[in-house]
Length: 158
Image (spheres, rainbow, N blue to C red):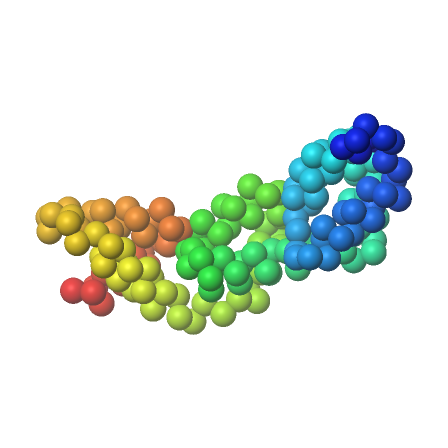
């Protein structure tokens, strides 16, 4: 392995850097792989680093999924479909995704859809009235909300 100055990076140095990277916030295995690749760590060494991070509890797919679901729902106001798709993209197992969804409180899901819809409407006052419904539905679907939940929320808007 070589570092940015061209010097050889030992396994221990790569592990130490990766531990600091993971200590800052929850990371997926893909996040760590990308970072190790950027640090020019070889593939076999990268896998060994990841295995050691898991063994030392610096890296946990379940913790990552739970933090991701909670943060992207509460802060970014993404819907369940978009959150699940993003987690799958990161290589998180379906079992961990479902467990993270069970841990997260979605009791205010419909209110979240209404808040997102209200924010969109405030920013798009120039949209012709005949196009508002379609464009809003399209936007909400793009944010990851389920079509049936969007329809139920629409009934409350009218």
